[in-house]
Amino acid sequence: MDSQLPTLRLLRNVILQKRIFDIDRQLPLMLMSEIPPLMVENKRICICVGSRHIEQQVPVLKHLIRYLRTLSAQVFVVPAMGSHGGATSIGQQQVLASYGITEQAMGVPVISEIVPDAIPIDSPLLRKAGLKELYVDHHAMHADGIILINRVKPHTSFNGRIQSGLCKMCCIGLGKAKGAAAYHRVFDVLGFSKALPLIVEEVIAKAPILGGLALVENGVGDIAHIAVLQANRFLEKESGLLAMAIEQMPSIPISKSDLLIVDEIGKGVSGSGMDTNIIGKKRDIFSFLPKCIYARRLADGSAGNAVGMGLADVVHSQLVAQVDFPASYINAETSLSPGSVKIPITYSSDREAWQALLRLSGHTAAEEPSLVWIRNTSDLRYILTNCSCPKTWEVIAEGISISVDDEGNLPDFIEIVKHNTGVTFYA
Image 1 (cartoon, rainbow, N blue to C red):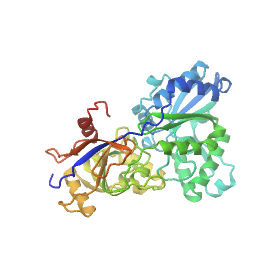
Image 2: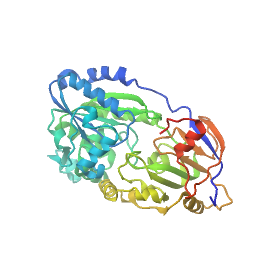
Image 3: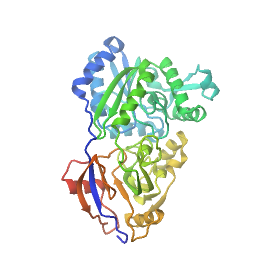
Image 4: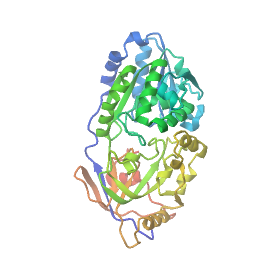
């Protein structure tokens, strides 16, 4: 490499695993308590799941299906993911399949259609803002009851006491692409914090939503907490769950760096491809601020959706080659964020990209920029850096020199971690 990476140290976060929820022991009892038999017995129940990778979503879903089927409920699953999966039925089924959610694996039908039912709205304020109809997945709307499963976490664009979780899935997820586009326009007019509760109240009043499972993850992808909520408690309880999620959420423990290398981005990682809370683009929670961001490829499970590419300053050409542009554009247009899919400066090797990053950050080849290198914004168990080591992180290896291969490319982040830790299961 003509311009060498600095010598790096590998750090491990030693306080990420703060809480663990015992799914097998605790969840069945909670389901019986909060979703009593009379609510679901012998009824046709729709379970809604989204497009985010949630590490332990499958066992949670299986417990819910098992509980409902013991009560002779007829259960089916629908994707509640707005415009994701290219806003097509097969695309959304494929997103769920990539997480292991298939008819064969779950033992219940997975029904995916993209045309929602339209339901007149009562709220004068929403109507004045231009929203005349609610949009709800057709099959969900005609079930006897709907139960949502979603993770609660800070949103990558919106602020407020309620951000990503069951409430947002009621609107953006269940509304399919048509609803997602309509609701984003209302958010633009009224503001997210004002519009979201109004829409949620309308949806809960008119759709057969029984309740939901709100999941809070810790920093290593384990479930730290599950709240089983009946629908009339969504708005009341989600703010407390959001505070818990922020407490559990990992971050980059450095105030600033010249460069941030992100091995993988995409919908399989975050709704914005790279979590803006982590990379310094939304600074209401964490303080890390890099001068330049380099993204190397799309993460598995992204299905070609490269929303978030536009957050980078430089990208590798392999990332651009992986992009499904129609699917990415639909998602960007629905969320009114065209900048999220703009193509940054692109190079065909890490060597070329590194030299560009030095120029962009105001460094010469002889100078050593401060660098943070991560796998993705959801996986911050380890970081590579030449910055000072915070006390909450353990130094696993120092003096790491990293070279490019014959084609000018760096090894993958996970391979560096495996080589320096002996952790073979890291993936």
